[in-house]
Image 1: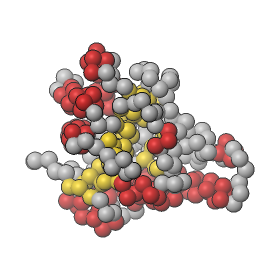
Image 2: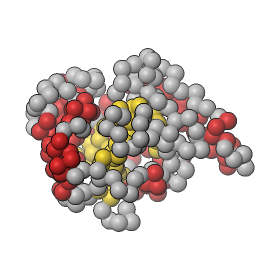
Image 3: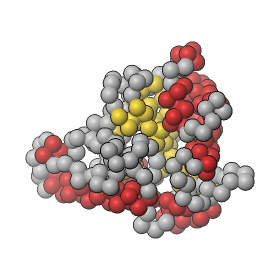
Length: 279
């Protein structure tokens, strides 16, 4: 980007790159978002298998093939399955390498719709900033409920040490995914010792199906969290896109100020905190 040090990253496997699946909806959100189109040229898609890599090359200029010896990530990895956990921890280790190369990054799950430029909403003094399933406190309160699907991380010694610590911590919490382990280690004295400045992102701006943004004038991203099943995700994400198009059409036509409070999401319909476990 402008600083030549910041990139946007997402990871995908074959199951999410099928035509008309998550990946296509993800790219569409950038195209229909408010001042998000230019961000696509800074997006690097990290493909976890050959099929996802080939599909990426067909539709996007920046693709990177990440493979793990002896692991096939091409299938649909069910939440908390062995393949799912391997995929999540491969991602954490890869992001550590990105930091060591000197790049700041925004990591985003592909089931997050980018509706506005997030950079103005990040905290200038945060090393590690993370979205939330549920935002109950202020941005520095460790008792928020984070979601590792959206993070903004600056490359420095503190974040590199933290990602090493995070990856190593998986061995002390076997069977847990990266988000659960982060919830354990965020209280560890090591975080204070290295001086890591952690910030939690308000769901007013960075919402999801667990806790949708209330105001369409303020929403930045919408995450298909609290949702089990690829078909359910796709169904409700398509509704997000239609809601956003309706909102943008009204704003483009000279809509009223504070229009976002007058309109509301039609989602979640198949997803949501009351219907599904948080992830």
